[in-house]
Length: 111
Length: 112
Image (cartoon, rainbow over all chains, first blue to last red; front, side):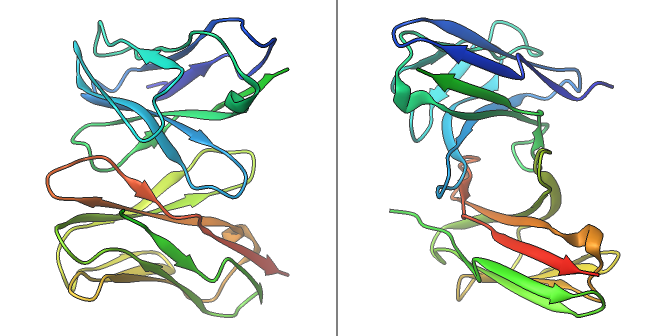
C-alpha cells in the first residue's frame, strides 16, 4: 500500500491564483482530513470528510473548498490564494476516525 | 473553547535518561486522547489512542497513561535514545465527534 499520498510536495503561488492540493489514500479509509501547520500553532483542521459525498468544515475553513467524490481522493482547493495561506498542509486518513495516517505534506508559499 | 496544552514545550536529555511529558485536556465529554510522534522532515505517526480512564499503553520503551477525570495524560520514554528525538503531539476529541484538537507538542532532543 502507498498509504496517504499528497501532491505537489512544494508549490509557490502568486496572490489571487487558484490551485488544488491532491490527496489520495489506498487503505479504503472512510475518514479523511486536511490540516494546516503554522509555526507556533498546533495542527488546525481545515475540512474533513466521513465518507464519499460527505464533507464538513473544520476550525479554519475560509478560503478553502473540498469535495469527496470517491473514497480514495480528497482534494483541497484554494480559490484565490492569499499570503495568509502560506503554510504546510497535511492530509490524513483514518478507518474509524481514530488513529490518523498522515501524508508527507505540501509546503505552500503564497507571494 | 476546547484547548489542549502540552508541557514542557521542549526538553533536552542525555542518552539513557528517562523522561516524561504531560498533555492536559478538558475533562468533560471526553472521547479519545491520541499521542503522535513527529520527526523532523517527516509526517506525524500515531503512537497511542486511548479512550478509557486509567488506560495504559506501551510500545517498546514508550508508554502512556490516561486520567480522563482530571484531564491529563502522561507519555513516558524509558532510557531515551538519540532516535527518540522528535516532537511528541497529543490530540483530544470530545463527545462522539472525531474532530481532533491538537496540542503544540513537546520537542525532545536526546544527546548522545
